[in-house]
Image 1 (cartoon, helix red, strand yellow):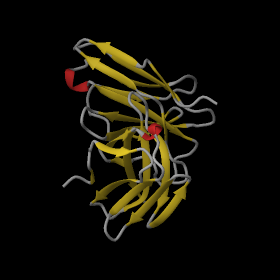
Image 2 (spheres, chains in turn blue, red):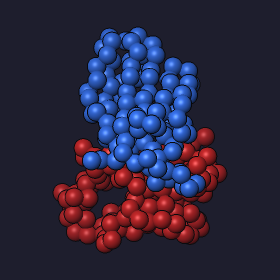
Image 3 (cartoon, rainbow over the protein chains, first blue to last red):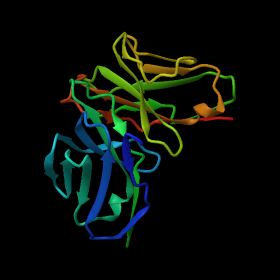
Image 4 (cartoon, one colour):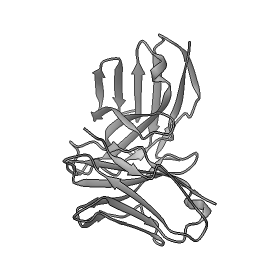
Length: 113
Length: 115
């Protein structure tokens, strides 16, 4: 079993819809959870950064972490053409080290006009 | 306010040649990390460096790969005697500190193609 599982998609949604992206993981030591957005031929851009369980909202983006289920989600409200990208979940454990991230393979999101 | 700068953006090497990838961290950042993204794979950690020090190279292949971050100048990821399996996107990230309050900021990567 991979440490982080993420459906590669592609996920196609109409503009204005609510998008739901998610990852599951197996390592209970993960404490810090991130979502990155990656446009084609670009580097990952940090969207959300959360610690432990709970919700975090930033503009149109909401990140949820359910550690009991080892399940994290990213919701995008009022989706726009510029949201078309690959979304990567990433996570790391405790102990003060933030750098050794374990990434999912990414979900490709495309918007229908 | 420039972000993490990587060059070249694209690099083509023949088998057996050497590849040198450069990374300049964001201004004020002294911690550099290299990740590799193989086709159809997620990003994988390779190495973590501070100025003149390798902090963690647990993700680096044991042979042919090396990294440095000198006192002056960019960080360099060096791959000797490249093979086709080294073809990948190599991303550099930086942070102001190596703790949990400093999420990583990535550059746009160098895409290495080995022919």
